Structure formats: structure tokens, C-alpha cells
Length: 236
Ligand code: APR
Picture (cartoon, rainbow, N blue to C red):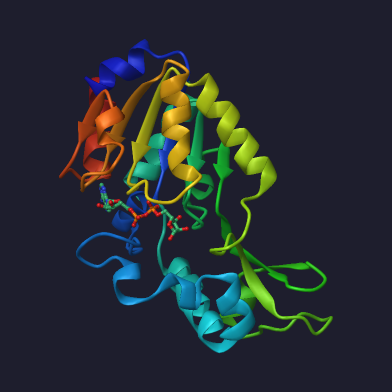
């Protein structure tokens, strides 16, 4: 059915969440088993408040995330999506992920809604550095400011250009496929509704149920994304 939807659609948009990268070895946030936010309160480590009032724990948390990122790589699901873009089967990816794996796998039309862990920048002068700076435990900018990852922290606005692109893509979609997101964080979870309101078919592929399953034309639970995409690829 998903293969047929892909064949019938002239404009297909993918929205990915942390579930896209668990098969690369990166934990997600809310999986009932080992989601990151089951052990840590995001407001204590991934918020503007944490950066300003709890900078040691903030830096420790992101030092660990950036270090684990360097040990992992895109998985088969990322590679299939990149192949589908090259073959014109899908047109764009909107991602909540900050791991950069879509681009690393070869995808080109990617809107990174929540920024990226690939870079850090200075709180004061905004100068950008590669994330390796954090791995070398250098957290200070030449100007003396604190370096922070270029991700969207809780309490911050999303990057305007990525947000606008995601909205445009969602409006153009004839088929909108969610891969690996609990759809609990706004405004990312609004894009499936925008697509639906503009006449798109909505597909949700997620291990666990989401609040948005009721709006979907097709829901696939309890299946790994990599397996689903591989199976669909064979049917295209
Ligand atoms: N295959 C299919 N689904 C999976 C897989 C997999 N291999 N691994 C995990 N999942 C599902 C989980 O069941 C979970 O519902 O992916 C979903 C991931 O949801 P979250 O952990 O909430 O991640 P996400 O939706 O991307 O979170 C959104 O929250 O913390 C913020 O900024 C952070 O971008 C993140 C945002």
C-alpha cells in the first residue's frame, strides 16, 4: 500500500524524528524503553535556562551527545531515502533530528527544523565552529563567550528559513510520510496536519502509537523503519 502511495504521488515529503536514527545507535527521546527524556529532564540540560544557569551540566550533556554522534553513522533507512530523492520518488525531507545523517547519507533537500549538532556557535559573537571543538573540550570562543551547539533549545524559536521551507513543502505534498516521531513537539507536529489540510495522504511509520494516528491514511506500528523502507523499496 505504501509502495502504491509512493508510485501515485507526484510530490512526496518525509518528516523524520529521532526514531529514524535509533538504528544508527543514537537513543531517541521518548521511546518507552530507553528514551533520553526518561532519564533526564530536558529543561535541565537542553533549554536556554540550562545554558544560562546550569552551564556545566549543559556542556556535559552536549559533550556526550556530540561524542556519541561521532561514533555513529547514517543507517540503511537514511541511505534509502537519499536514493529515493535521487530517483525522484520523494522530493524533500523535513527533519527534527540534529545528527546531520540525512545529508551525510546523500539527501540534498533537507530542512533541519531543530538546527544541527554538527556545529557550535558563540553565545555572544555568534561565530561558528565545527562540533569537534566540543570534543576537544574547548567551550570558549576567541571573544570569551560560551560556545553552544547550533541546535534549537527548548524555549528558543526555530530557524526561520527551515520553518518556512517545511511549511511550503507540507503545503505542496500529495503524500506526507512521518518516520520515527512521537509527534509530541510543536510546531514540527503541525506539518502533517498542514499536508492533510492541503489534500495530502498521510502515512505514519512509528514503533509506538502517536496522537496523530487518527488523521493518517496508513499507520505502521511495531516495525523498524529500516525494514519497512527496504521492503517498500523492493516493491517500487
Ligand atoms: N523504527 C520505528 N520507530 C521508531 C524506531 C525505529 N527503529 N525507533 C524509535 N522509534 C519511535 C519511538 O517509538 C518514538 O515514538 O520513534 C519515536 C521517536 O519519538 P521521540 O523520541 O519523541 O523523538 P522526536 O519525535 O523526534 O522528538 C521531537 O523533541 O526533544 C525534542 O528536539 C527534540 O527533535 C526532538 C523533538
